[in-house]
Image (cartoon, one colour):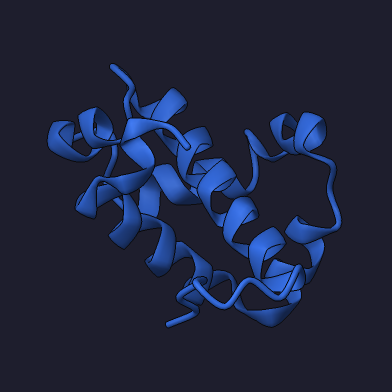
Amino acid sequence: MNNHATHPLFQAAVDRIYREIGEDGRRELGSLERGNLIMCHFGLAMGVRNSLGLWHDHLLVEACGEQEADGASMRIVEGVWEKIQAEDAGNPDTDVS
């Protein structure tokens, strides 16, 4: 797990997007292979950038381990994907709030 993955701002962003995309969005995102998450760049990741204000929230961008909004949004998408994968695997430590 990367250092950014434990940052409270990053976790809060992942949890928020997890809730916002709903069950259908989680099912669709969870069905992708990790290597295909880049396909989300102009869809889900753009929504993440806009929803979380990543163009202006430099603290959140840095909490994602990135220097710009595009990279930060993809980190958040990856975080949501990882949360879905852990949930699907029955990981009891996964917070699905």
